[in-house]
Amino acid sequence: MQHEALMGTYTHRDAEGIYRGLFDDETGQFETLELLAAVANPAFLALRDGMLFAVNEQVDGGVSAFHREHGRLNLVGAEPSGGSLPCHISAGADWVAVVNNGSGSVTLFPTADGRLQAMSDLRQHEGTGPNAARQASAHPHEVYPIGESALLVPDLGTDHLHIYDVAGQRLRERRAIALEPGSGPRHAKRHPSKPVLYVLSELCNAIDVLTWPDLESIQRVDTLPADFEGESTTAEIVVAPDGGFVHASNRGHDSIVTFAVDDWGRLSTPGFVPTLGQHPRYFCLDPSGGWLLVLNQDSDNVVVYRIDGGRPRDAVCKAPAPMPVCLLWDDRQE
Image (spheres, helix red, strand yellow):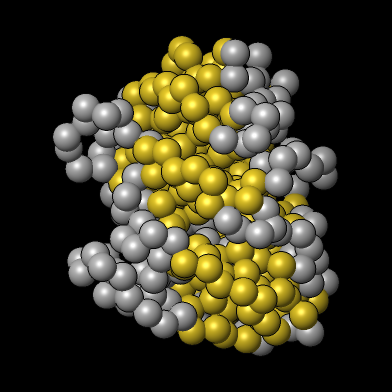
């Protein structure tokens, strides 16, 4: 079966915006087909009810909204993001949330009939961490939906996880917890059936396993081999649909690490495959769950691995793609 994909990029070198891709889940072949929208630095994308929302990761940050129709993207709205370097976006039933990594804020935008409205709320994070080069101020990195009306926001700059409720076009902070100083939490994913949360930390190259919803630490595992001596940072984390394995990407070591998940949600038995490219900022599983696609930002390619026994094994495709940094599946019939 063939699957449509929407790919976000950093618009440097040959990249110009949001592209359409096509993936064949029988052969594992991926192809970048065409430019759908010329827009600046669409570094992360979110789909909701036929609408595509993108951050514009610039110093003067923005959010763009597109209507997906007849294989095309039509720009129907754009708003300032309320800060600098917006790097992640999520879409709810009647809202869009964004994190401004550069200026350290979380912003909320109402939507009406899918159309983006002016910003309705902004929550400014404050604080620092012990890593002077990376943690001189707050740097929230993700707005991860937990249900239809709540968000979990890891803050790389302050080593905190924040939980916000979305209510009445406002963000209301429910709680915040601190991780180990210098961790640099970047992204998080819940297990599909076990009461655990996996938090990927960029600066310490580790995954913290926390109880959910209590957020008590039960394990920390390294994402790098014990004998690795170079510089590396993590980027993305994915939990397999059946919950049996957790994958994460390493930039520098340029690898995907895969852990087995035990009955308690703890991680063990790490295995590594090279990404066959530099700076794997993003990766994902395909809709069939049989393939893992790695987007190598600095090598301008997408590499496809076959999943065998829950782990990526053999690379079957290395396809050109202009500075890819995000990929969404769009199999909606029009």
